[in-house]
Length: 316
Image (cartoon, rainbow, N blue to C red; front, top):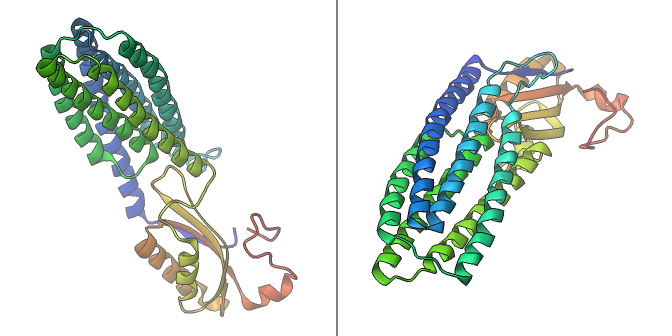
């Protein structure tokens, strides 16, 4: 590569610390979620509540989702190697996609069961549902707090957080079902709320798939304005042109950038590079920027420097 890139040790150690915190949080979350899913499944079966059993089923897939997220988070800490020069960070994106598919599977199971229940309502023990749903709410809030503390915008942890949020809503729905059944004896509330949970899970899953696909397509991360970055770099002293500008992310959290930078004087490149990287880090949070300098005579040597073509013929 004709340019240079600069990645501070502080930046790397911060990423590693965040990864370790994420992994610890996920481990604890798995333990809590799986434990409570078992309690909820038994209680739901005993009370005859679909909302509780739906929530328990959702919590089991959650545990699996959290397990997958934990495995991917620990994989992503592996150092880069000769074959995987970026390391295993992308493993988290694949985990997020699998998590989203799991959520869609839960929806596919939940909807027909709720519709059957609506057609022939079943007796539900309101008090039992109320008690278990209240405990579930506390457990889910604890798990959410653990994960929220560990979340650094990584797509994988976001997938896990979405699962737990779905669970939290499930517990709230079961709680409401318990109260309504106790006060009015109106049984259809149980399957109706189960359908509501299914709709919420569906929206989260589709959003997660969309975000994961954007990462895999190396789309410009949301909240990043490519033209804004170009203008920002062009405003720095000694820079005459910016092309082949790319910004992407490995797992939804860490931003990477590469660009060709036209400079007035190639002798000043060291200062220009330092200024570019400092401002990219401070303004946009881009800690890993690979920049290639192009002296004024370069434009004359290349007959047609294809500006911002998807892939250039000239040297990278």
